[in-house]
Amino acid sequence: MRAAELAQAVAGLHLWPRDGRGSGSGGQHFSLQPGQQGSFREYRPYLPGDPLRRLDWRAFAKTEKYFVRLHHDEQPQPLTLLLDASGSMGFGSALSGSKLQVAARLALCIAWLALRQGDAVGLQLAAADAPQGGAPSHHAGAWAALQATLARLQPGGRAQLSAAVTRLLAQRSSSGLVVVLSDLLDDDAGLLPALAALQKRGHVVRAVQVLDPQELDLSLEGPGVLQDMEGDASLFVDPLRHRGRYRQALQALLDDRRRALHSCGIPLTLARTDQPLRELLRQLLA
Image 1 (cartoon, rainbow, N blue to C red):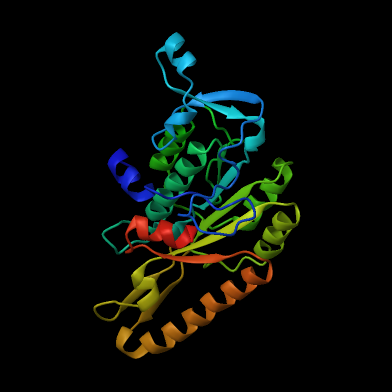
Image 2: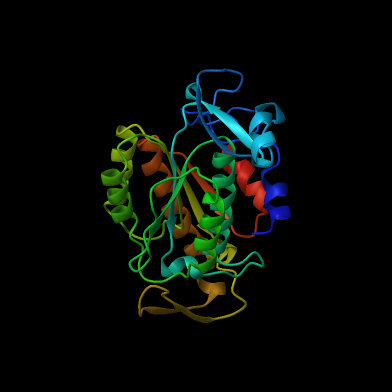
């Protein structure tokens, strides 16, 4: 992801306040409490967008590098990006790329916003053969490491969202922010109880459903065969005959997902892969 694209996408945006509510553009942060000056905790490297008043000029005089001072009253909280890297996320008909590529760009932007305000960031991948991420980190190079991991990531296998959430519950003793990025098309009976357990543990959970416009509209040019990207199943469809029923069935599925997550207090944002990245972020952080 190019620096110019990132800067344009995140300009003026902030993460949710700690309780998960409020505007993403109103200056509220997920964990920081700007303006309060408690005891010094540690330094972290300066990131574009940090207020200049937070720079430590003594540290610059010694090292000729820019550092920001963090204080104990700023309450850093871990952000975990739970990314579905299964086979179905490899589908893409829009110019912006596959669902996985769009989800990865969203993840990078959210991670940048978290690191800029001093929070630690970690990645968990949900797919059968995907490598597992490490513990959240806010140290220098965390964002570059995340970017490198996502650039190498290839979709494959079946989604393992409930297993990934269960691992997260076992690994994270302290509460934080968890953002789930997936097409949520897999019939995973264990996912909702696992996400509800995260909420009860004190985590703030947000879900992003990433879908391609062809999936939403069945906008094929003519009859053809649809292939399961996570198995061997296939299905012949004629969009002129099946589009109406397909859209009704899909809308019922989307409504069911939204209601189920809402019952656990988890907001769901629908992200179309043909939407501009900044528009998706503003929609998610609203």
